[in-house]
Structure formats: structure tokens, C-alpha cells
Amino acid sequence: MEMPRPARLFRTTAWSLTESAGLPIAALALAAWLWGRDAGLIAGVAVVWITALIRLIRPGKVPGLLVISVIVLTLQTALAIGTGQLWIFLLHFPVANLCIAVLFARTASGQNPIIARLAAEVVALRQPATPNAGLHRYFQDATWLWAGIFLLLAAGMGVMLITQSTATFLLFSTVATVALIIAGAAVSVVWLRSVLRRTGVGIRFAAA
Image 1 (cartoon, rainbow, N blue to C red):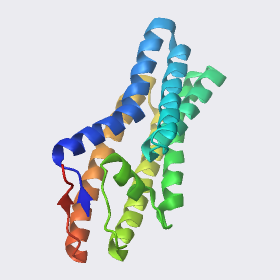
Image 2 (image 1 turned 90 degrees about the vertical axis):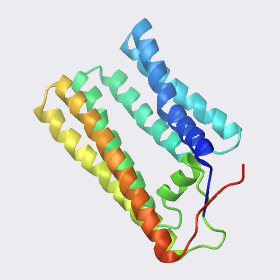
Image 3 (image 1 turned 120 degrees about the vertical axis):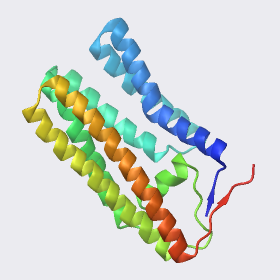
Image 4 (image 1 turned 90 degrees about the horizontal axis):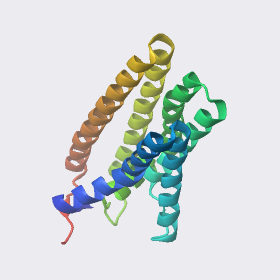
């Protein structure tokens, strides 16, 4: 298995997160500050669609993380602008996580689990040329793990949306999302190291 050197790994990961989350959030915040909430929502979804179209043209493939952002932000914008109701606007948080959980679960048992695709796109991780059954099984199980994480987030946010104030909901949903994603990433890395040792698959840094 091959992965980029630490500096390149940082750049690749940082850009993947920037184009899928940083750019649309920045556009949303700026436009909302200048012209109001609806303008901000439209700007955020427009930026992520433009980024996806650029990626589709060059290099000809849209990363999975960016596809997820397109789905989530489009759903957010449609719900918020279409209804104009605050509680329905907040509803997109649990609904979006539920959609992501379903997306992950649909690929978990197949030949191309989404975690394997995201590992290749986000951190440029290259699997061995010869397929490894143990490694493939890890990516399938890891995809189920992340499906469970997003399902847990959806359920927790749904409960908080009903029982908590808007400010409390936004605070706790943000904290829960960050905490569960960090925990899931840590478990995935430790789990992968264990699988690599057990299957005898080595790991090396790519050439500069």
C-alpha cells in the first residue's frame, strides 16, 4: 500500500476539505452578511456546484467527498428557501446525515465501498496492485462503521431538534459532529494498522 509523504498528504487532505466544506461555507457566510440568509444559501450551493463541474471537466472525475457536499448543500438550500421555516431549515441537519448514512450503507457490501474511494481521493491512498481480501473486507467494515456514525448523528440531532432550543441545538450538533468524526477517524486508522499487520501488507511513502 502506498501513501503520499506527510507534506503532500497534508496538502491533499486540506484541499479536499477546503473544496467540499471550506469554500461553500465561506461563500455562504460572506453572501449572507452582505445580502441576507437566502443569498448566502444560494451562494454556498452555487460554489460547490461550480467546483464539482470544474472537477468533472478537469481531471474528469468528481471526488466522493465533493459529491456528498453537493447532495447535502443542495438539500439544505432547497429546504431552507422552499419553506422559509426555521425548524424546517434546521431539519436538514439530521436529514442530511441520514442520507449520508444510507449512501454509505448502500456501498458497504459491494466491490467498491465508499471508504476505499474516499481514502484514495482525500489522502491519495493507493491499494496494492494485487487485490487483498483482508484489506477489502476492512474497507467494507469501515464503511459500515461510518454509516453507523452518521446514523447516530442523525438520530441524536433529531432528538435535539425536538427537545432543545435553536442555539443549544446548533452548539451541541456541531460539537457532536466534530467529536464523532475525530473518533471515527482515529478508530479507522488504528483498525487499518491492525489489518495491515495481520494481512502482511506493507505501507510505503510515494516518491517525491
